[in-house]
Amino acid sequence: MGSRAEVLGELAAEVLRVEREHPVRVAVDGCSAAGKTTLADELADVLRRRTDREIIRAGLDYFKRAPELRTTYPLDSPESYYYEVYDNEAIRTRLLEPLGPDGDRRYTTAIRQPNAAGALDAPVRTAAPQAILIADGCFLQRPELDDCWDLRIYVHISFETVLRRGTERDAAWMDSREAAAHRYRTRYIPGERLYIDQINPADRAQLLVNNENPAAPILHRRQPTP
Image (cartoon, rainbow, N blue to C red; front, side, top):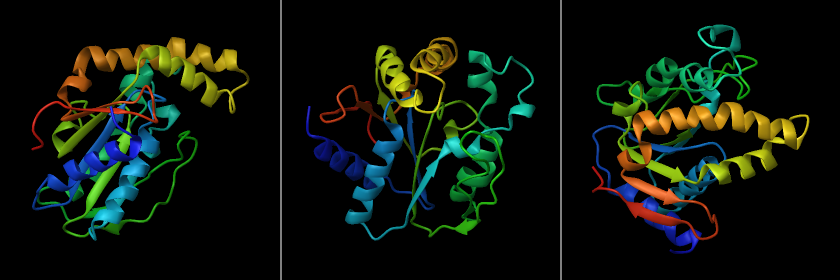
């Protein structure tokens, strides 16, 4: 166990060890309310202080599919959440593949509002050849995306913590704490169990951060950095 600053420093060092002939694409994966976005933001800040390389931040909640396109499962079901919410094709073709081998480095970091209510006209930018992408989101190691990552970080918390943190966070925009807790129990947590049962993302990631205590996270190295 170390301080948060120490763990962020170790993560930054691991990212900078990855060598590619194209921008390095780092996944910050994990369940809802695990602290992915905060960790990814902080990691990007540490990297900006340690290197002159371009650091790109992307939140994949900006790559959701419009609700009217989610037609295979009931919208509030865990299956719809897991299989239909994220536009994996757009994530690949508009963000990850352009930054990968033989890509033109022309990318965008958003296509829709995080609630998926409306489309966004986000600019297309051109990354520097040695840029580093830090992208956070759920389900990042699904087969549709997995081969596009150069480094995978999994942020782990228990489902009990997912329920507690998620309820506290989402009650602010939902009708009540009870409504937020119900959504986690019936949609988010069962959908994320599908992901964990099918993919086993914690064991497949090169780096795992136990974030039960955000002030003192624990870093585990699962295998050598590629």
